[in-house]
Image (cartoon, rainbow over all chains, first blue to last red; front, side, top):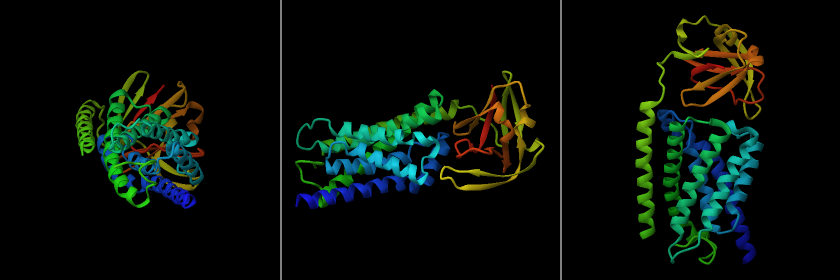
Length: 185
Length: 143
């Protein structure tokens, strides 16, 4: 039974990795409409992409899951040439948000219903981390533009964090590892 | 239920802050009329009308991030015709969304501005990826 759970979790993690990577491409044309009108170079699609990492890490409840998934995504991105403007430094942009996701999910629980805020914070702060990393490596925006860019990243991270909470609630019932390990309603 | 309320409130606050930041940025950002480019050289700003530039044919191949080759064919301006061939170290090209790329003086031979639909796009032939493929260039700073 334990082996079957592990296999199920691994398949779920792999699926979330791929969904995160390619979901970003799918949503980019729509998010670009908003970011183009704000005259900033992005910040929305990444939050959507990170949602899958947060959901996977939240449901499986495994330590280091976010970092591992970020690392796998960065290898896939390098292999498929999906590194964008970051080039060879793209792994930094994938792994750091994963690390932040893991850190947020290790926040000690307070009370029975503690999962939602941790999931929400993980998505919001990992999105901000991804935006900051992209700015440091590529964009180096002037301060007012950077402030808006980070706000957009935080807002979209928050909206996707809300979605992640809803997804965790529903998926935990189907594929969750049990209340002792992962997301708790 | 209480947690979801917190999540909703924080999301609403973040959206409100973003709206304020957007209004501020859209009011203070440097704007350039469509079809114009700001050229900053020797500390002085000059507005260039793209329709007033003398265009020549551009034909070549660039490589994108996936290693795929893409043919570039159109009308544009060679950078040395626009800013001169010497007397600077590098040129910074900024797009409308603040994305920018830098071309060093010794790379000038390969650098072009492709002009189409009142919009300028930086093309640097010979690059191994499309990092310097800056679309909708609105500002050129000669440093």
